[in-house]
Structures are given as C-alpha cells and as structure tokens.
Length: 287
Image 1 (cartoon, rainbow, N blue to C red):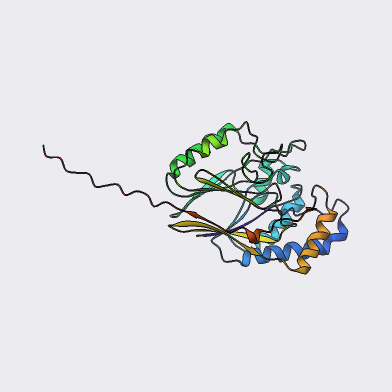
Image 2: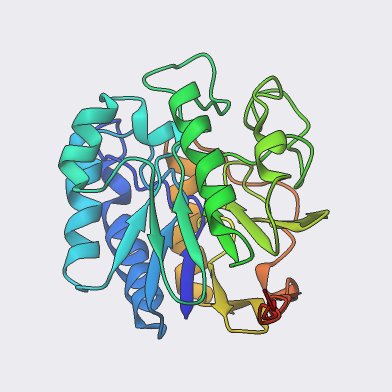
C-alpha cells in the first residue's frame, strides 16, 4: 500500500486585496495538485491547512481542482481550515468525515481532528475526551498491525518546534499516554510547523511536513509486511517556485520561511515491522 501526503497547502482567497496574484494562484495550485495526483498511490492525504482561512470560496475552489482528478483523497482539518466556518459546515462542504479509521490488510490508518473551531487566538492543537477515548480504543485494537495516524498538529516535544506554545497538541492532553500503549510499529504524520522533521520515541516515528509554498514536495509512505518506508518526490521547478513566492508574499495569515527549509528530499526512512509471534498449537491433554 502506498500513500501520498502533502503538507499545509494554504489555498487562499483573492478577496483580501490579492486579485493581482490570480494567475500565480491558478498556475501554482493547478500544477502542484496535478503533479501530486499523478504520483501512483492507493490514497492521497492532506494533513490540514488545505486552505488559508477556511472560507467557502477557498474550500469550493480547491476541492474543484481536487475532485477533477477523481482519486481517493483524505483531508484532516487544520486550524486555518476552521477559522471562517464551523467544523460542521466545513465537513459538509468538503464531504469529509470527522475523526475516523480505514483498516487494510497491512495497516490501520486513523485520521484525527486536532484543530480548534473558529479560535483566532489559539492555533495550537487540542483533542476532546470523546476523541481521546476513541483513539485509545484504536491503538489497542490495532494490536501488532502497523498504525498510521494523520493529524495536523504534532505531539508535544517530538518533531521540530513542537515543544513551543501553540505549535503542538496541548501538553496537558495525555496523548502520549495513549500512544505508548501501541504494540508494534506506529507512524504519526503531521504538519502545522511548516518544516520538515523526523523524530522517534520508543515504538513510534513522528513525521512532520513543511508547507507546500515553502517546499514543493510529496511524501510517499509505503507499507509492506516487513517495513514502512518514507520517501519524497520533489515536484518543483523554477516556474512553480516563482508562483509560490508570489503567493506567499501576498497573502495574509501566512509567512514564507525566511530561513532555508530543509528539503523533504533529504528525509528517507525505514521502519521495520516486527513479525507477529506465532502462537504455538495447543497441546492435547490426556484425561
């Protein structure tokens, strides 16, 4: 099974005085998503902040591009996706599900919702008791089958900058207590902090993706019986980078990285999948 994943896309409206970047916006997002969906994969995932402010025009326009490719696509919500509208309205517009799972023969995939709804002051991550209970059951029920979680916010003190305020799921939420119960391999995939990063803690690997306007790349996660591999496909060129720079410098609620972004192409990783121990046949007992 192969999964193609993109980081924060920040598709913006043109109604905030940005009409002059209309050509850049059309060229960048049409090209970027065409190249994303042309990569052979069984599933395509956005780890949130698909839009820049969650406005209805942003959602409808970016989903019009996505839907014309007719590929299986999952979008977990980021904080930017929930600024303008309620969670219910966004899910209705996108036709996506709330937190949920997809089970396959090779892995369990879980899609989390860590975003606060219409909270302009706190863009950090959260998770209510209902979702914590649900996640705890998913971790336990997955047993030794690989578990891959997709969320917008990182777990506290894992990937780069996740120890900072509003840069992670709030540290008071006991998510590590839940994840630590996992038997076998776990992979947690997130965005939010606009930088590529990889970290490991016990049986879990944490993979963080940069924003698409900073680094035009796609992560490829492949799951087999013996490993989970992480690789990258760079899909940029000089023209695409120029459009990205024009958009990033024009829109509100987003800032291009001033420092050099460590490129996704440098992040290749292999996670071994332990072979489940065989249960010995029960011995016959003479009575």
